[in-house]
Length: 155
Image (cartoon, rainbow, N blue to C red; front, side):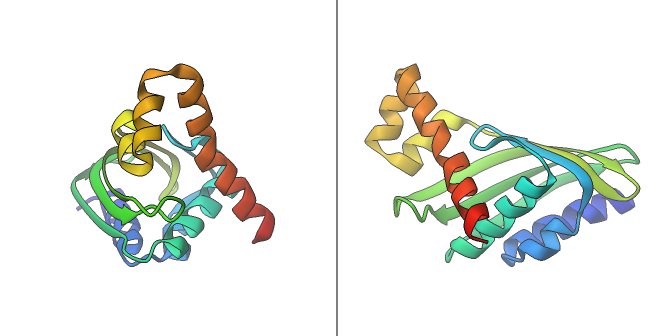
């Protein structure tokens, strides 16, 4: 197994244990993260995001598979099942992750998933409306980023 494959597995194993500190230790201080919900985050934001997500979820279940990596890049398929704390709604998110590595750490992490599917699960009718109306969709997309900013201001 390539060391970067082991790094990805360590990252998701920590996620499954809701250990944000162990997840964050897998990133370079120069790392970036991007996904459809939070947008692009710098190191300070991404580490706060993982800490927030792992500390706020009481029923989080993470599974991962199809991990592959070489010296420069990697990928994984992962799924998260959880109750969204802000709405109380159950979400099953299916994600494809891509990684770039440098010096044995993650320097770029991009998660891809169906944002419309996530919005309907997470927000119910409002999420469904957001899938059809761009102004509502734009407001809904501000939610995760606003929650992160609030979390960072208090932690």
